Length: 233
Image (cartoon, rainbow, N blue to C red; front, side):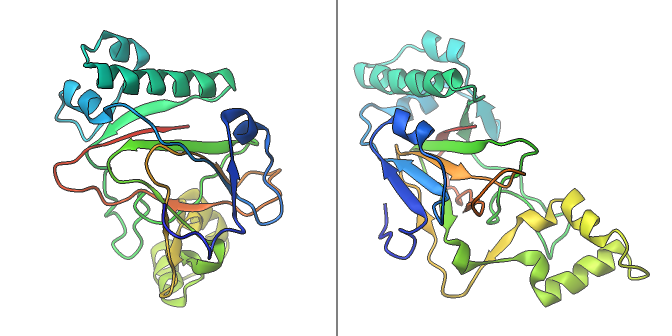
């Protein structure tokens, strides 16, 4: 991972899965990392799952059926173990092979796809877990280095035009209904942090009982011809 000095007050490092699960977010901490150096050939798994789809959800049954080399088997064992660890904690992990996500061009001045820095939201207390095993990794951004897009004057003007300039009644609800309030713009001097390969992360999200700020994160721009393999829940 890159130098974390400018965001270290927001990140807590843990030594195992149990500590990752048990450690609560508090103070300024809204991201936790179980740093790992994984072994195995994860790219082999991607190659074995032939598809022209932009995103393929890979199920455990399919993983078990793949004919793999010894290095591929090591990678598969890690994926299965991570899946079961998260599942046993009540999470609903999904393992995805990603060519690219769909771009949002409905509002050219305000894309709301996952390539934009955003926070996750839930009506119940929960966290986001994710790990990239192959390909480009996701980024996070210190909260102090991002600004909510709906607060940027020129963007707010366009949003009010979209909503209708006759009245402000219901405008804030409109911003929430269409998820505009979840997205952030990096400041000019911002330094996004790559989450790296193989590390399992827990990110704070926006929910009614949260005591910390939600973590700003985004999907990376994929390299041409290279798929990502990631687990998220």
